[in-house]
Amino acid sequence: DTGVSQNPRHKITKRGQNVTFRCDPISEHNRLYWYRQTLGQGPEFLTYFQNEAQLEKSRLLSDRFSAERPKGSFSTLEIQRTEQGDSAMYLCASSWTGGRSSGNTIYFGEGSWLTVV
Amino acid sequence: GQNIDQPTEMTATEGAIVQINCTYQTSGFNGLFWYQQHAGEAPTFLSYNVLDGLEEKGRFSSFLSRSKGYSYLLLKELQMKDSASYLCAVRHNAGKSTFGDGTTLTVKP
Image (cartoon, rainbow over all chains, first blue to last red; front, side, top):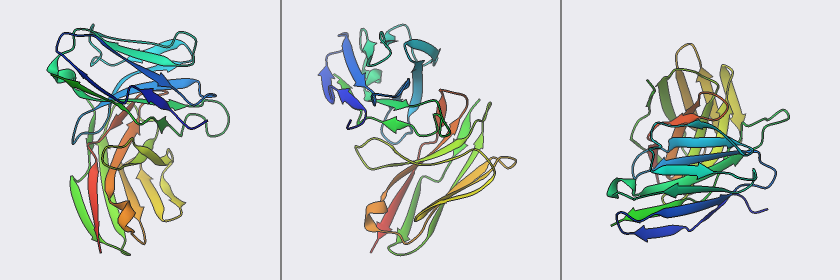
């Protein structure tokens, strides 16, 4: 396993279009997180899953954003009717809960860059 | 609300020691992370502190004082490759962490 995988790595879309990002976590990891990061700022929490259950969503995640993790493995983040303010890097991360180091090491993917024009 | 403060930029010399401070005021505290992020890349986990004190890991050490809402990351024997952004993040619960905006460290020869 090579780590958390995200695709596409880069996406340019026109305002108003829908986009979907996919994240494949490290295979044995049961927790999956989505963050958003813009230039010069730290990542902002969007949502996280424990297996297939979405346990928390940020208020940043407006009605235009939806995330799923249907089988508790890969996850998708969809943005509908994109706006220029959605331009950012979307980061996925995963961790394992269980055992002595439960959930304390979170591994990030390389991110998916979104540019809305 | 959540408030995490760290210096925006720092510069240090190769071979030296640098300390990057982080102060926080947050609701819900379940540990503090430090991450390294090179430009255009994903954050990489460096350390996690949940109890007060110093955790040492090779050239990097991280300190936490929960009563003071304070942490620092200490980098020893600086190398050019250590030039990066260093992110402090407070873990609130099982899932959510709040990140600072990062400290950009430039290591000069």
